[in-house]
Image 1 (tube, rainbow, N blue to C red):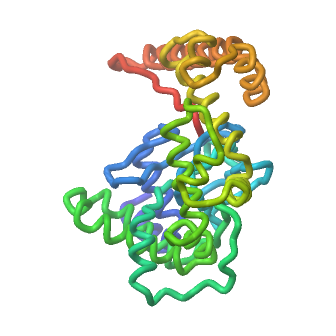
Image 2: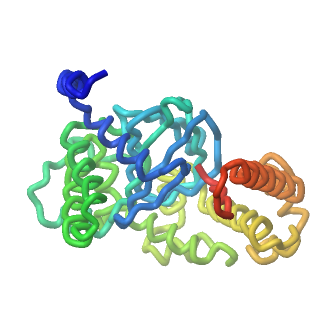
Length: 337
């Protein structure tokens, strides 16, 4: 093919769609990694080449935008599938399971996660001028929204800043502010308003969750926590379960068990020591509840995870050894999807 033919082919090729533009940027930055932080605060990329999951994870208030492939979040027994036409949005820290539904080596599942800035939402709402949603009674903290051209364009401008790093501190917050504005005018606006409005029950539940995350090893007294956020115990229990799909005690148990898992896997604590450190008084109770959540007893689960990690490390080392001139490196395995 001559240079003339190549230029003619490029001119005749249709322009890249917004999704294709975003996918190209994500692949360039991910560089084969499953998860990739970016120089833009609160923005991360993900890439999955095969269907996988479900994986336990803690989902922060965020928007998850898939530009290629399909994912699914499982929260409280309910499935939330999302793809290039639908985004996932969460307004509270939620225990969940994440699955990759559609992905392949040729067309990996690609997307991004942007943490929601609740202060920015509150400022935008306080300024006024935003259309009020028709239905303000949401009663949930996770939703699936429709991806619109203006939302995609906002994200494209945000990702374009990766090619202009000196502009990120100045323009990054402005583009993120626009994205938050777009979300407050989207079909998921009621979900965000219930958390950002300080006089809303959702805002108080968010404060209770912050306390639980900081004090998961402390014995939980529902009446005291309800009083802390100025709610009655029955009202607090009702709204907490409505928004998180679990009771406050179940939420605390999830935090404890996942922290114990981290301590055993990363800090090499035995099961009894990890149990006591996260607030359990009975190792046998800890073992039973751990098995119910993760499907296997703690000792067996940690042994399997370490074996899996060692196997991945060995495969990585073998691959590096086959590459002439390659340098020693460290293989990092991400535990959550």
